Length: 417
Ligand code: SF4
Image (cartoon, rainbow, N blue to C red):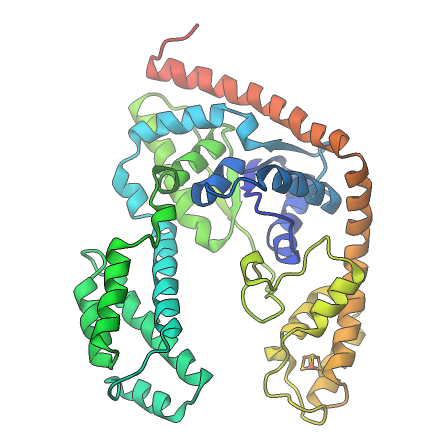
């Protein structure tokens, strides 16, 4: 099978990337014809202002991919912007893609939702909001009354999210009136609510994704995939709508002009559950990630900061590994089954302290990272040699992509020389 997949160069890779994507690619390259690319154009769709680190991020991605074992003899590794045919095909696809397909794209809407919600949350919490009256929802009211300090904020955040969700996913588009009325009814000061809603309506929130490039990135994605006539694309659940869009674009092109493109299948990837050290989704922006390039000491420190079972305060309290991020990591990095079962048992019986448990994890995590770190050092010493792998891969892809473009131009009756 022919498989295409890419990754945005946003900086050094962390272990979440490894277990979410790379591990799967390593398997795929053993069995299929794979094309893996650094999606630098996609990195610009929402980070177009921040290009100062782009080249370095690409370099780090090259180092990380090769250090993890992606092998140019088994898969074709390349850089998207070095194969200009992706942009050419994307342009032609944009002619046949109805705007509504993009505007209804759930990940576009969800991203906008998150940006707006984040803004509202920061706005109200930053103003140290005062609630004027008891909130209307009964269960919420009870919870809010009982809570204090940080808990109150947490409850408010949840409530705000619920209200904003209703306002945002309204059939007719963001319902500002509903949002305003409900928040005032909830007890927030009218003046503050009006200011927040006005800022949402007229301010800069979400403007970074209010670009043609961001709206149409699924079209570029379709071109990335279809230009190689891929049979399948490995994706997480949240990417499924994009693949569906790629299939629809292929179908539309084939119907309009000539049967050129196969409709690629989505290969659902099972992602290992690996949260950040604070228990939230692992992300560079949350500053909670463990990087493949972190040294021993950094890993030791990060593991020591990791969230454990919140109910386990003292060593004498029995713990519950099922709700502990450290134990989720153990399941991946502690290969010795007996040791794993022993930790589980001792935790439940309060026979092991969290510090000791974390030290075992840090040792195993470092053992996993050691060969990657060694390989990274080797690559860094001779980076030009390894960059050439990606340049050669890009040249090979140009040829394949150009062949597809010839077929496309013929089908569309475009002028050729
Ligand atoms: S002993 Fe280990 S598994 Fe149990 S709560 Fe502490 S860190 Fe988590």
